[in-house]
Image 1: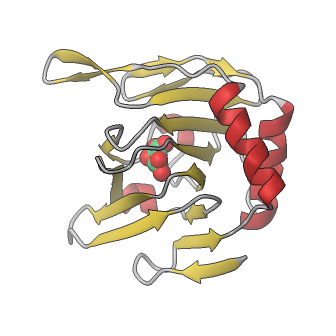
Image 2 (image 1 turned 45 degrees about the horizontal axis):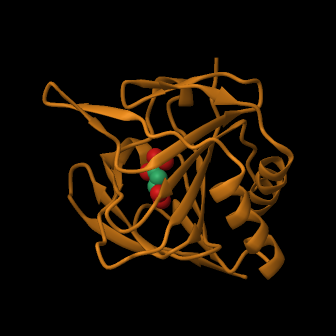
Length: 194
Ligand SMILES: O=C(O)CCC(=O)C(=O)O
């Protein structure tokens, strides 16, 4: 396991590589691709409704739903495997979370457009713990005013921590990567407040 502090946003991005054992990786892949109810949500753009280019599921410790991209995601309670992953991530990054958004990118044609995780339920300075499994995809961050851009390849078993200024000062996205044929799973652990 290694920790890389990325140059840039005040050391507020940390990346851990090779966090999981082979058995954990196998278990988490199987769990997220086969054992949870994935849902294809909708997004409204310029007055038209489209299917989101990825599958999602949302989990909250108290079953509290989450409104994101103008859509309310129904919450599931944490199943034991996801609780185990949450505790692993909390111990690694030193922060506790009460919810998790799972995104499954079925192949390189799935994507996630420019946004910040800045919904008001996340509080003024959200801290995010993001875990990736499966295909490597590039996570792109762009600063809101300087337009400085960081490209971070997120590989199987990587954990990315985004500190309190990131959702305020930067936007991020996962662009399409058409040569990628295999799925990628991303789990962002978050803290939702009342
Ligand atoms: O897939 C990723 O790495 C990012 C997911 C994301 O941007 C989000 O859940 O808000």
